[in-house]
Image (cartoon, rainbow, N blue to C red; front, side, top):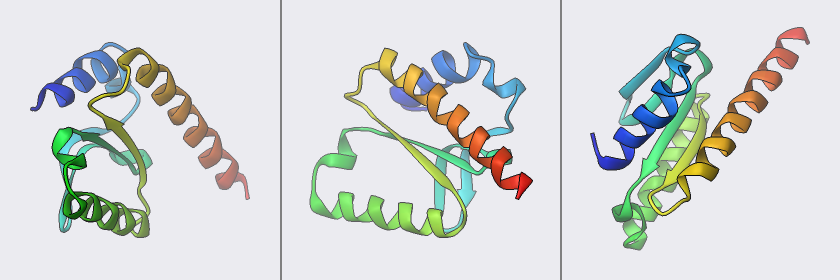
Length: 110
């Protein structure tokens, strides 16, 4: 795992015990891509973007295309960039999960 992936695993998944609520798989295959951390039962794809994701237009376009295809396959994406404040990311990610859960509960009632 990269430093950022290890941080996410240790400080978000383990510390917050998300693995007890969600089916989380690292390097989950969704052809033709691999999702850094997939919350499989919710179809949430967490992508941890290191510096190479921002170095040139080709890398950026590749990420945009990957996101488009994953969204077409029903995935909701959440990106964390290497330069983001980790404390803010933790709070924001929990808000994101809560929002997705509420949205899915609402949709299941329709």
